[in-house]
Length: 178
Image (cartoon, rainbow, N blue to C red; front, side, top):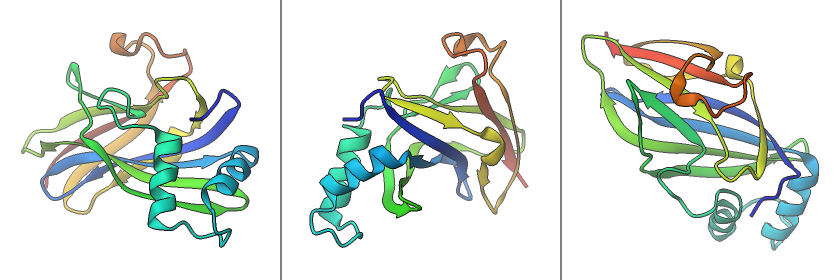
């Protein structure tokens, strides 16, 4: 499991299919020290490419065991937080000496209707093991078939996010059928 000296630059994208919102794509780029430690432990054959077994071990080591309420993304829809369904499409690579994880946190589909639906997405580490730096201005959406608008802004004033630091940002997303 990660420890308090771990740092990650994080990017998130709201993901959609033709029916509606399906999840949050996460791209985490870890600091060089942690990356070196993890890669040396996981890449047993030292070839720089992660096998299926190595990827499974890496996912468990860094992300832990999946829990719906502790999945690194909080998604607010109306006045309730959505429970995640799981981690999908987990992949890893090393770029510029940094371990980069790419994965989707899947949620129950929120269907698109003729009226806008609004989501607020943020990133968190429920165990406070990873200091995450999130640039929501670099985040966005993955979609081709719906009318989707988004912007990043502070979470201040949203009472459901009261426990977050004053500078925390969210990705505000609204979507509907075209």
